[in-house]
Length: 357
Image (tube, rainbow, N blue to C red):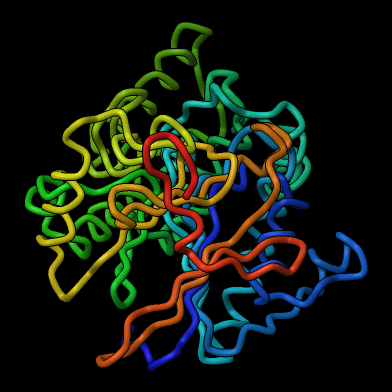
């Protein structure tokens, strides 16, 4: 979107199924009215951000018990923000991708209970039986049915997520971008389209909701085929795994935490990526790698905003990045907003030689 001079952009890092952390992020960002209770936050949240653009840098999923509640809150707030002239933008994290591919290695068991109560029981009732579960081979059928490409939440929820977004002089992405990413995937718009096309399409054969299988071997084979089809079709801009250089997995700009990146090529890489983006994009905002506090590195070009706020990660203290768009004739103003109400100028959060300056 075209930004107005002095328009606010706020962004927060990984949520990982922690509803209380998400509420804290939104209240700290001054885009949601502080609720009297978590129940009020879920059932009647109120957007107070006006035309503020709020960006969630991904990883709503895994490690915590309240993933669906977090998605409901973000969906509700997103609709309200649009009506007020603002926006709430949610990016893909690697954990959204893992769930969509049927890989549930990092799931909190209580998160599966939430999925079962909200999705599995409803499907049992709708279909009049529970044999639809067989096609998933015992691998969290409620979760898999919800998040797989072409699944229950693919069109109304996951298809609205982006891999990256450019707002003014800023690019937001879960883990990072390189010049090579932008060239290979057709820029930010290209990679967003690739992800959207993948998530809305069913890649496996027809669903077998009646559970007509001859035995356990056929059930397991069907589940394996389902997973393989989605993974084979997955675009590289959201693919990969631990150690992968993809936009949702790389750590070249954010590791080690709280210090300058270990990769000696990181400065050259981010310089090339920002130059390739053009349009005077000056900084990249990333999550993915937990920090003790929001900080910037690489001459202020990499802002690392994942503070590990979820109880399933490290119960870090929520902080929010705020950027005031300077328009054509002023520099942007960058601040870190704290839960205590502080507004810390970004210049005090640069890291250099393993120290905060």
